Length: 329
Ligand code: SAM
Image (cartoon, rainbow, N blue to C red):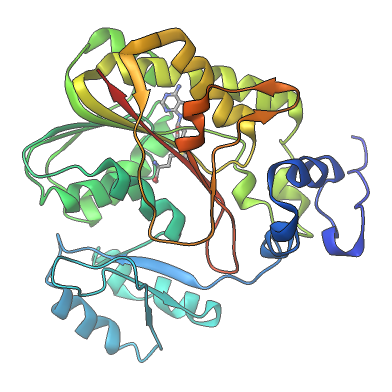
């Protein structure tokens, strides 16, 4: 096996050079230092209160018994302003994750970026929803919670081991409205055309958000060739997601990759293929570490609508993320 490429400067220590160089073309110059630093930050543990297992007050009381300092996430609350997400310092992670609170499904440990996609999807009780790449179930359980377990929520996961993890998450969190399908998401659109009010595609990706400085295992399968391959799969999945959506319905596409080939380019090619049948919807994210969709990368230009996509830039708390919201007309 070849040696990993050498880092460029002390700032970028032990991230692959190719990745860092690409990042410098994606992220604005004034933010690159903090973005690179985020890959070595010891991030707090963040979690979501699962109101399918109790009221916010009951769950917060159980959490307080652990005597861990918890900081509410200011932008994620219920309709009366009570926080639905918290962060605790990394040093308390073990204590939290080994407490019965997790096994009882009272909370779901999840990165804050990941909580944004279901908020953009905006599913409400009674709707028919598809989660096309669902395991281990962070977003499926959040969607079920937003729908108060009422309506139809279909969750797709082709990998058996991960499908079992998904099932375990749903059971633990008291989700009773979901049917799981172990199948390739690319086949779903043709089997169930025009069926769903909203479809979430949290696409399999190169997981660049999970790179950790000094931990080569986190990027051992990463390469530009792999990004191109993944991009083709993502386009197939997004096509299927659009076919499965009813006219007038909404599709949220997201990844935890920073690569434009897996993000803007997937949206650009999809817009080109579907023409007037699909358009992008603007949406607001309740955070500041956000960048508009790029309109060009690697010598390729993208449809002007792609600007409406949002890239969440990683911070000392949040992981990188990308979200696009599409309307099927
Ligand atoms: N939505 C999940 C959550 O919030 O917990 C995370 C999903 S993860 C980013 C992507 C998932 O897509 C993985 O579980 C992977 O096994 C699955 N996947 C891979 N290929 C797929 C395909 N062809 N169709 C549907 N899902 C696929």
